[in-house]
Image (cartoon, rainbow, N blue to C red; front, side, top):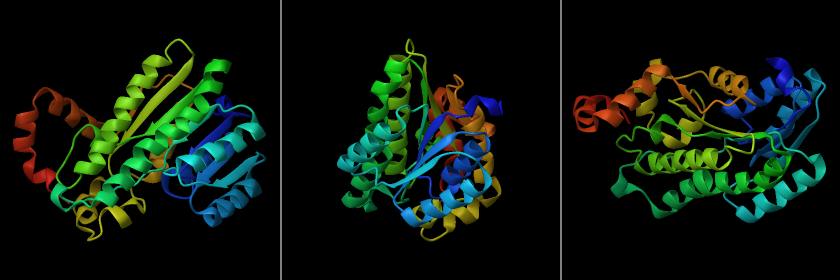
Amino acid sequence: MSGRLKNRNVIITGASGGIGAHMAALCAERGANLVLLARNLEKLNALKADLQSRFSVDIHVHKLDVSNTDEVSAVFSEILARIGRVDILVNNAGYGIFREAHEAKIEEIKGMFDVNVVGLMACTSMVLPAMRQQKSGHIINIASQAGKIATPKSSVYSATKHAVLGYTNSLRMELADSNVFVTAVNPGPIETNFFNIADEKGTYVKNVQRYMLKPEYVALKVVDAMLTPAREINLPQWMNAGSIVYTLFPRLFERIGKRAFNQK
């Protein structure tokens, strides 16, 4: 399993912390060369120094705000010119803000779509031509269970993740004959600083603490699936089972699950 990533070139957005940093460490441990992207260059450089002290791999870091499409184009052009080949792109950058729809600010709506959707598409579009030409590669999009089951106070965030899933599913079909794998990762809540922004009052975290996933566990599941034809990674499994029931019996599910959904 570990030999599959040796000497492969892996790009990870949102790599300065959370599951992004954990994925970077696991990839480096398995011999992959890394390009780590995030807005916080200081954290990226610290992560680079730590990983290079432990593993003999090439690591490049770039400051990147994926919501700035001009910046995405410039940074990815530089990356492609430097490393030549991209084997795996993990679109991990993203954030959410939990508010009821009538309280959502237009700037927040645009911000979430610019990062979670447009930024993800912009990064993907930069590597697609090369992957098609080399007839290999893997695009991994970090979506969310929120993209399958929308809940109160997550209307905008859920909408962005629905969009990611729609894009991912279409892309998978487009690349079916190109030997390029496309995987959607749909985790439930993860113990990361995501909720520092998303859940300002801490109510949601308090209510779902016992269900929260460990970032290292999610990262391991993603890295284990790299360069395999995994269609989706759904975590935890019981939550994904709920999304299937929701698809089949939406009205019943919403009525029975009303109390559980109002945790934010």
